[in-house]
Length: 257
Image (tube, rainbow, N blue to C red; front, side, top):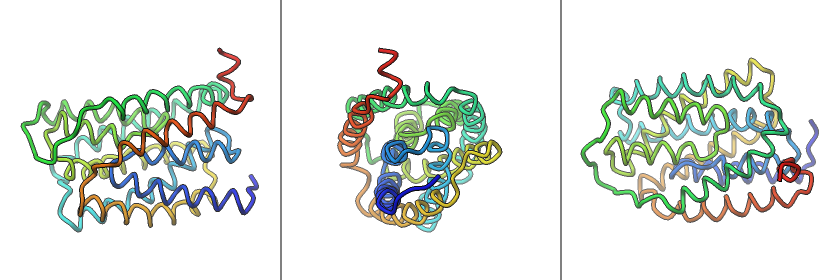
């Protein structure tokens, strides 16, 4: 599809912002997917293209966190594998959903996630006793992985919350290991989308360059300052973007309501 220079510049700028937020606390898809939809990209192609740019950006964040020694490959290899399988299933399922249904679903999910970010309890910086063992955490990550493959925005924040609340990790360690698990879900979902021929390669790679830069900035900020202060921004942005999507009278949600 053809995009104007202004639209492409807008999407690249959004990808940089999303990468920064993703590395801090997850949720960059709350910016990129609505932005892609607003630019006129069809829903399935928007999800697929977002996976391409997000996967490359997330890989760069994983590298940054590994250099700092924050990622525990031995402890989180199994949850990452479960998340990979869940994401592959979700990305396969979403390609059989009517795009008009998906267009109507996006604003509802954004509203739900805004409420989640607003109401979720504060996260500690210190490690605590884990409430779930490795297999229990793997099951949770598999479910979140399915969600990531099917839709995606907010996955990083959901994973971070799970690692803090259920895995007992401090916030920065949770953010770092979330990137490893999120990379697995992105690779799986992208593979399924490539097989389905849904990826807009030029657009996705253009956004990926900006997303990598944003992820490097966000990873540095997370290591230096922690992930505090990001959730209020995610609440505001998700509400603003939801209002923007619902302002379109052609959104299929209005026919349902």
